[in-house]
Structure formats: structure tokens, C-alpha cells
Image (cartoon, rainbow, N blue to C red; front, side, top):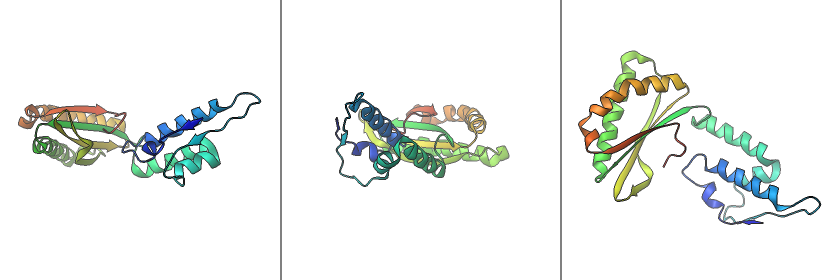
Length: 182
């Protein structure tokens, strides 16, 4: 069997892309041979020395998973953190950015008021897909090791977010435990 174009999974902006690629390659390898007929799996890549591929070849999924979990722990990604992604889309990039900056200010004020909510903020940042359907896209990522703290913070700030004047000039959404960061 041949798997073409594995590089997309090696260098995606989605932090789960490596995991999805590893699962796909293990699944394909499991179907390559049957009973006494061994099979071969070929991967097409411009990066044959990539860590993920070496982990799979030399140690199987367990080696990959160990490395991946260590990296996610260092980066503060699931399963070691809980995420909420606030996305904003507008016809002008400045409108989406202004909305998310206002949201960030509300969140920072709430945290500064002694709420002791251990939440980190990242952004506002341009989304990995900066434009879609003619709209500029930006996002604000909230991360916490404590799910209750993250939810308490969201409960505290959402009424103020809805009341923002910028909220009416921007299409926005909140994604708790986002499957991807697009």
C-alpha cells in the first residue's frame, strides 16, 4: 500500500494533525498484509527524517504517543489543558481584531479582580485560514489546566461580551474544547 502526501499531517497548524496522521498510518499498515501474506506500506514524504515517522517505524504507536504527550504537556494542550476558542469574522480585519481585543480586556479585568481563575490568553491572532467566504478571521484562545476555572471564567465574562458594541459588527462564536484551531 502507498500513502501519498503525508507532509500535510506533519506540518499542519492543527495540533492534533500528527495524531490523526499516526492513526491513519497504523491503520493502513494493519491492512497491508493478511495472515501468511506480509504486506508493505510506502509513505511519500519530503521529510523522511521527521520525528513522527521515525517514532512509528522504530517504536510503533506507543513511541509516537509518548513523544506526542510530552510535547502537548510542554505546550499546554489537551489532555493537559482545557481550551476555549473565541472566533471572530468580519468584512474588515480591524473589526474582528477590535472585538477580540475588547473581549481580552474583559477577560483580563475579570482575572485581575481576584477571581483566581488560572487561565492563559493567547491572541488575538489571525486564524490559520485568515480569510474565508470574503470575511477576515481572527481568534482568541483561552487555556487552563482546570476545566471548572475555565468554565467559571466563561460564565463570568459572556454577558459582558454579548453587550459589547463590537459584538454586533462581528460574527463570532465560542468553541469550548475545539476539535481544531481553524
